[in-house]
Length: 119
Image (cartoon, rainbow, N blue to C red; front, side, top):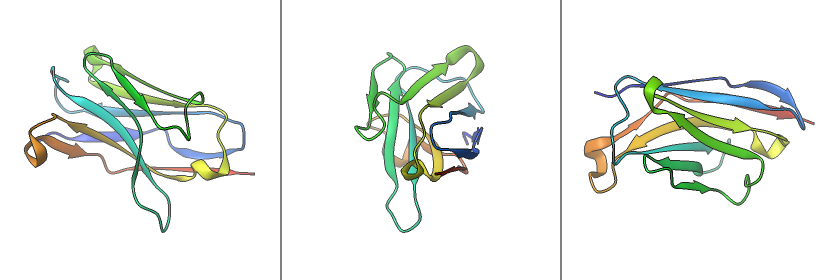
């Protein structure tokens, strides 16, 4: 069982920054995709950003230019740098690790970390 633990959430003002971390309980092997999702109250969970072990990234249009995804494979850790935060970024942020093609057999989630942005 792979465990993911997020940290770094908090309450900030508009325009400030936060850096989320996601520590994985085992080495991040090849062919995995790490993603950051968020879920605001009353809304569906949405993809914010993802990165494959090959370095290919996918950033949601709503955060492009403000958020950056990265990973430190040696430390089994992924990051989401969030700059110029807006109130609409308020949500619970979840880390996800999956291997494309394996479906639920390799699809793990963290417990989530709250991000609150006030105006």
